Length: 357
Image (tube, rainbow, N blue to C red; front, top):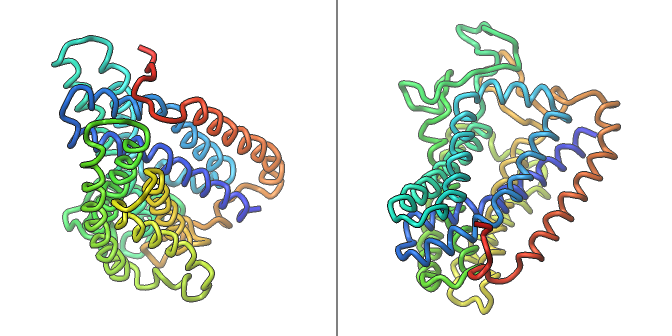
């Protein structure tokens, strides 16, 4: 049952980052490349029409995590309190940036909320990447100091950063040079994803330019990916052991590599949707590779006093998991039906669709 719920939550999280990921990426594209008012309006609309429905997947993932792995949920929401509050405020400002920009036809008003949308999207992409970096790096479970836990073994608390800014210290912070690298990978990946979304959903004047941007960003992503794998081995020399022991897990890095390779041919694609498929493979491959490298661990411990949090020592009772299985499957089906209906209603280009203002 633990593996079942691990897989379900992994799928839901991947769906969130694929769907809301293009909203983050659209905000980044809007911030740096949209110059004319017409482009700003239509690019904002390409995110605004979808963002609220896409975030249903985040709510679903949180609910399932609380139900299936309550100890992990409690530990993470306590330990990552500071960055989670920052993420919450960024989500709020991204939403009001989208919803408020068209309320008044004054340029200064629009500029303020355009910046709110763009900067919040950029920072959200960065912080979600930093969060993934913390998960694969590990934390000081139990707050061990001088070989003694200062609180319960499954709890921790991280400052935003420490004085050394190093992931190799016994008391790492949320932000260090390793998590920043993963954060940058997230920003670049979601910017590519957002650019592909703008291309397939709008007729903006910068669509041709965005294909050149995607190619350049993909070159940057290739370099960052190589650097991150090297750094990952420095931070955790056993990081790739799962792939060596269970060769079938290599399918997940292969998915990532397929997406990365495909995007180098963005100019040759006959259909704009192919680029979006490649950036989707990037996201799915990156998340699944990270989870596969850790499995069955959910959160590694950087000390030897307390064992890491896994799907087995943080799971709810077998009875609770089995009872929730039926309802979870129903909810999962409803999520997919909701997504399919919404995407069909808003299929095609959205330039002339009403944003509801």
